[in-house]
Length: 423
Image (tube, rainbow, N blue to C red; front, side, top):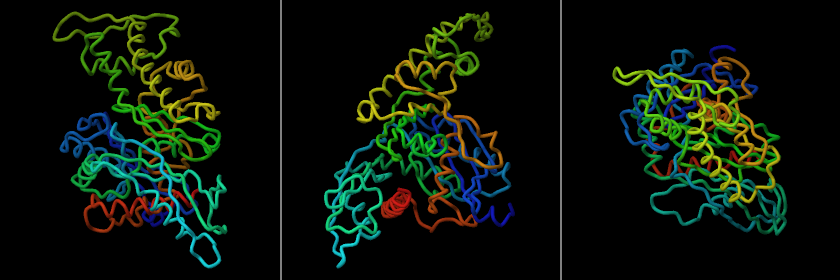
């Protein structure tokens, strides 16, 4: 691939998480193939449960991650696609209806655009804003189950949509951190939606699947069925809580708890056949501490079970419990704990597997083949069918604050058009 082609199709995904910030620089060629050019990762200390609580620490982590990705790719990053999560995220269903006034009663793209705008006419608290409006189905003159009404004849068209909202202040602080780091925000995407682009197959979305992205501060749940997202939820319990439990339960330092979880952790104590003793250095010259692997596993299992039980509640709430033939896909850094797949199968009563980024064609494919990069890679893959998220010739978006409400609403309307084209 020549340099000109790379420059014309550069996409950058920025996953700003509670425990890490991950940047992925990629190119999309003329045949829509994604090539990973650079990856960067930095510890994150400026967020709590997915929400920015310290601007300066978050800015520094963003700079470090993107500079690493720039060094690896040889590309100067100017604009990024940012993932948004946090326990302030909520979702709801909405309906809209418009009449067709064309002389021949033919439904046009403009009619669908009017309809989707009508679906946004909902009462929201002043501190909330719409992040995504995702069509579920269209109804023409009472006939439901329609995915593409353009070109059909009718007098009345209705839509059933899935609306995802979030705190205005949380979104603005995310924008502010990126801009203060010296970059522009190209688009904002819900993190579990982004992860789905990287780890879910089309046939899984068709059959029905639960995506569980266990991050550091939050666990994101997205339920797909019939090739569209049906339910979303954010759980304020995730990998950091597991680490905290180990730290408190075994009286060790935070760094030691983190290493115990990753090097010796197990989420299903019953599957440990040979118990082993793990030695941890003593604190401030004290004697080393000996810990049984089975005890460590019991601590981890208790918290992971809690997460999975809340996931089970969300599955029931969605109303799609009996339509999830593809089971559950676990991803995110929290899914790396050994034994989590059989535990998920037991608690959720369905098949489970670990989701890794797929669909990449070149570049640093092996470097991002881990659940921790699912959101970062997904943010990049989101841009395949969404020109808004691409960065032609590295150009910056129009000048002006991206936190402006009119700009945000225009982006939402444009993104809805892209969703409609994909149906």
